[in-house]
Length: 214
Image 1: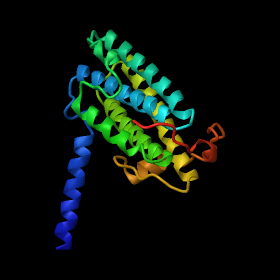
Image 2: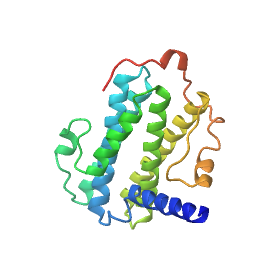
Image 3: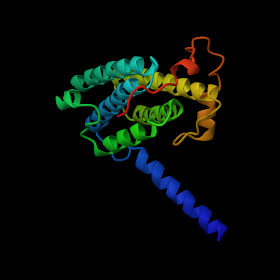
Image 4: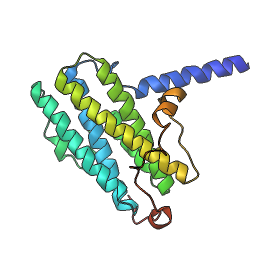
């Protein structure tokens, strides 16, 4: 009975991971990958922008600005390959997406991030981990130099953001369990998060205050 239960859990977990890892499976064309990545960055921009109005910290505002730049970089890739980026990608209000899966993910992450600053950091780490895995998969596809350079730049940014949130959660006497990465991948990525002197100091007593509701 225990073996059957364990097998069932493993199958369910595999299906969840497959459902969450879109690039390289469902998104097979270059156009679909680029457009998906643009909307993924929009999701991050929207999420960080809303969280900036909820929690007293300068982290989310800075990251929202970074995500907007990432959208511009991906739009340059789209233009290079004559991929039409719909105007509404930029005109849509926060939380509005062409891709229904990204819309649902945005709502789930925003709901998870509303309870405490710790929960907000964990939801953002969740998002950054998804971005990392999708970008890594995109880099495995046949790409030209511009795509490779752009995806690598975005990957470095997502890895830095994930390490930031993990470090912040550890400082809060909490932690983060990866949802898509293997244990070894996660441990390798976060192995030096406390040895980097460039980490931004956080005064949690000052900033762990909520200032709004979505």
